[in-house]
Length: 234
Image 1 (cartoon, rainbow, N blue to C red):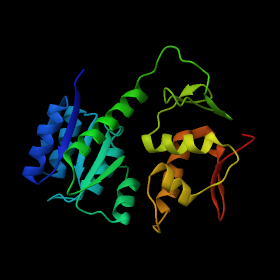
Image 2 (image 1 turned 120 degrees about the vertical axis):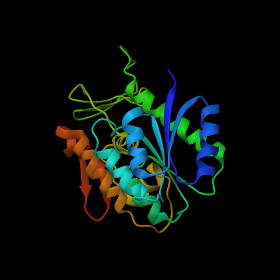
Image 3 (image 1 turned 90 degrees about the horizontal axis):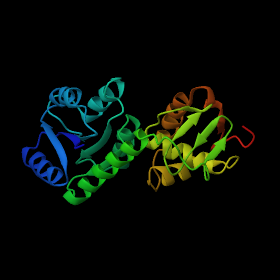
């Protein structure tokens, strides 16, 4: 089955360049030049990934991303944010509103294609639920079961869907129950961001992760003044 991408980009040359290369990589591509048009295209085509420009003529990419995440029919789509803004605060804001990845202009087209492909693959792997799986290596903390091979997450034996960043955050925390990870460590290992930047994005995603975990939310503990950990005796 051919994978689908929607490009929301008002710079025509950039959109055409991405469209050509993503089609060459095997994707079915739809383009849009405004946020409203792009949101409609996503609703109509239900793509695997959206390549979303930050600076659009009618609204910001941040707002479009928020709308996508709030829509129950397309809220699980992968979002790669594409922008000329490269400051750490801008990247953090993009991740806070729900973007899965972030590429700064001017970009190498091959990198964008690889990131889109990797994001589509991760989401496809998460959706694929094998009938049987090898239970060796499964991480179990309280009611949470996480399989690092299949990326399956179960709460009280019930399959649970997580966003890619939520999954990475949970996997890191439950890999060492009881260990406190500072916000800086989480930002570096999950988001691959380093340096003296605001770490509020970690708090936002921990809150979202707890909501996704439902009855297992209390497995993730806040250690005030230090960071977060998974309960050792959950």
